[in-house]
Picture 1: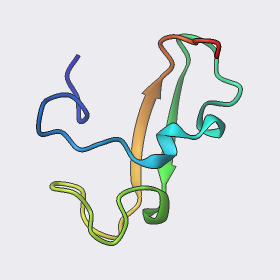
Picture 2: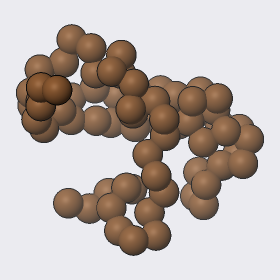
Picture 3: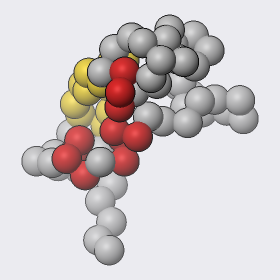
Length: 68
């Protein structure tokens, strides 16, 4: 509901948000701030308002857990 990754022209989330280690130890409803270096963020090219070669900070909230 709103935010950087919502909308048709929104950037895709950085790969680090797909790593299970990014959410290790979190419980449903928990929040965490991730500081991603460029190599696992948006790299040397950046993306729109995200400058190239910069660290990227994102706040995440674990809404639900689904077992595989």
